[in-house]
Image (cartoon, protein in one colour):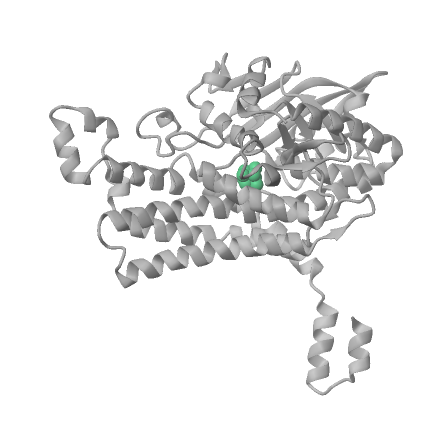
Length: 474
Ligand code: SF4
Ligand code: FE
């Protein structure tokens, strides 16, 4: 199990092609816009070595026969899924942002299931790859979302809007296309590309799951910009150490040897993978987001305490509401994990209804939580002058008078960062669209709900049918 220092060092040997606007970033590890996101991932390595979190952040692997980092681990019991949520909450609280390693974890579990369904050869290949990932304790970027283009057209009509196989050679395949919104892509050792949608017969070239080194020739990454990202590394960063990261990845005719190709045209297993991944990742937000909201609630509570208003009933009520909403998200994420069931492959899967309800809440409740935070923080959160001014001989005393001191100013910056600054990418828009936009969850909720049973129960209690027919309907 790697340490955080070993993880950061291991990133230096990669030669990734990463662009910030029109400039190639030669040294991403020390770049001020990238480093905070690396520090967030590094926390997932750190917790594996801290005595109080070691048991939670690592697990016994049947593949390696030893302990591995939980982020490379298979869900071999319901407790693994519950522990994942608990660990994510701790990490969300420790970093205040996205630590980027869950997509890979959720994806490798979904792919374990899918390759098991695809057949022994696919499965054996995947297990060999995963064993090496666990041994090297690699950071895996799970890459799912295609550009998709015009939604009325099929993939074949606009092939470059989808990642696909463009050539089959004796020793491997050549792939081309884009994957969007890749969380932590530039901080990963490998990219695990997966089909981002369901495909029909005749569209097999788009049904592709494969692992590609982040620095493979032809892998081109474009760094996603965030609000006020140029403040990173300055006193106005808000979050002084950590950050999230999203990149767009373009695969320009990238060669992948067959040993790293796990699905190649198997439409049924690919659909299984999609559903399994969606469930896992929709429950995951019940871990990380509550941890982030602990920080936001803590920031406005601290501000209220420092300014002497924390005893006011209206303030306390708003803090209680923020907490209530946060725990509501967490509770459903935990419940989805507790109520999990075992797939034929041996892997455990979350309860699909509760996982989707969890994510549906995440598309809504965070907006109310951030609204309350902005309410409690007051207008200075938006009009605060730069914190450098504190060190200026003339402006320093003025700054102290208008803010009450650097402590309050720093807390206000943190609130700004999380609600509409760089940190709002994972905390606002990702809550809406990450792991699928709201309508995607409503489709699963409708499909999963036991409508016939519910109607039969109602008919029975209305005196319309006997209990036996209710039992039959179940
Ligand atoms: Fe993990 Fe949350 Fe980031 Fe997704 S958004 S990778 S679940 S921290
Ligand atoms: Fe996400």
